[in-house]
Amino acid sequence: MASEIHMTGPMCLIENTNGRLMANPEALKILSAITQPVVVVAIVGLYRTGKSYLMNKLAGKKKGFSLGSTVQSHTKGIWMWCVPHPKKPGHVLVLLDTEGLGDVEKGDNQNDSWIFALAILLSSTFVYNSMGTINQQAMDQLHYVTELTHRIRSKSSPDENENEDSADFVSFFPDFVWTLRDFSLDLEADGQPITADEYLTYSLKLKQGTSEKDKNFNLPRLCIRKFFPKKKCFVFDRPVHRKKLAQLEKLHDEELDPEFVQQVADFCSYIFSNSKTKTLSGGIKVNGPRLESLVLTYVNAISSGDLPCMENAVLALAQIENSAAVQKAVAHYEQQMGQKVQLPTETLQELLDMHRVSEREATEVFMKNSFKDVDHLFQKKLAVQLVKKRDDFCKQNQEASSGRCSALLQDIFSPLEEEVKMGIYSKPGGYRLFIQKLQDLKKKYHEEPRKGIQAEEILQTYLKSKESMTDAILQTDQTLTEKEKEIEVERVKAESAQASTKMLQEIQRKNEQMMEQKERSYQEHLKQLTEKMERDRAQLLKEQERTLALKLQEQERLLKEGFQTESRKMQNEIQDLQKKMRQRRTCTIS
Image (cartoon, rainbow, N blue to C red):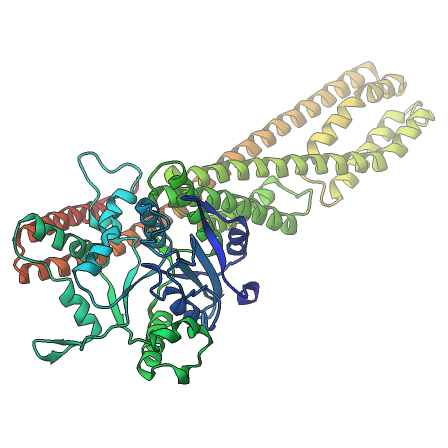
């Protein structure tokens, strides 16, 4: 809930100490407590270009992120400020302010490249802030975008003979917003007024030609066009006279240029209304703990000398969340069984029916909370744990039944045993009296409720243990002839054999019930798995369709601008993507 956020100001999320990037545990702890989806807005740009001012405005505060007023860069690393989203109830706005690129004190462009890459990987809206107009110098300063394919991987191991193309990046790259500060030009083209967005589109036009100069001109523009299909541009007038910039955070809106005030308001309104929830491949919405996991995975990869990989980050996140999903599902199962089951159950089927319902609900809980369960490893772990829990309940049921039946037998038959000891049945005709009493007590035992599944077995075991006593009474009864005694012995044997056969049949029936339940569980798991795979397949197709539409738009623009070679490359990418989509549409789940 929004009440969970208690950040009165920003905190360093990723520290940059002597060129080494490290995640700040205190900031990660704050993220771990945010249960709602997050909208992540990151701003990047050269140092001393006013990035922090815009981020403070998005936070709804005058102060927060350090503005500074000298030629030194104030922000180091990446700073975070989490605030309730002003226009999306149930969402948190996570603002990321990055250290200025090109700081002369660092003397390390590689460090800047990693900051740039991390801002892209973590955000759902990426704001690039620069001074003045979009000219070649501005494009040259945005060289970081041309290095992205050398800084980020979308897959841990691309398909054989297949290089990663822009489609892989488009699927998880954020929306791109270019903010131009102290913009002094009139927004015109060919004498006609144009919008800031049209100005950006115009500035990203490619040059015809194959010279090295033409290639250098086109490269950053091509990368922006391919990696960021959704682009937006805002221009800002100078807020105040240069000498007053040092007090910018202390000035009221009435003291600033009215045009600038309106431009900032328009920028904030756009970000609030259009910035999307941070989403991973497969439509997985990111919350605080998931963002925490992404930060750790990416920073650890960079620190160990690897390239941050989106697929690896998602898989690492899936490991954490799927493990938690298994535990949540098992806890749900235990809770439901604890509420429903009263041991001992009258029949095994009664227990198995309750198990099946609880198992289905537990699997649904797992499906709801899991994602990217490669090879269904965690679902299989859940199935194993639920089988063990079922077996534990069966064992407890058996023990409860045995205990209940043993206690009943003690209560019902102990008076008879006392009578035998007292010699009441050691007399002529005593045997028949004993058998009649035994039958009456057996009937009383059978009439007792909730004895459970061990009722007959415990009774037969008890009777078998008393056969010598019964036989002694029989032999001492002088009213019976030897022939009658022989007949009675045979009757008792036959009755015992019949009881044993009945017990074996009952055991076989229980085994069959367990096998049937196992098959039903398997079919239920398969059904739920198939439904989830179909949903995942549909989501992936939806993402691919979006990427395809963006690629077709870009190809159309390239054709209009006369870039046949680039258009053909794009056509190849489109055909590859269409082939994958056809395969996914026709594939069946085995």
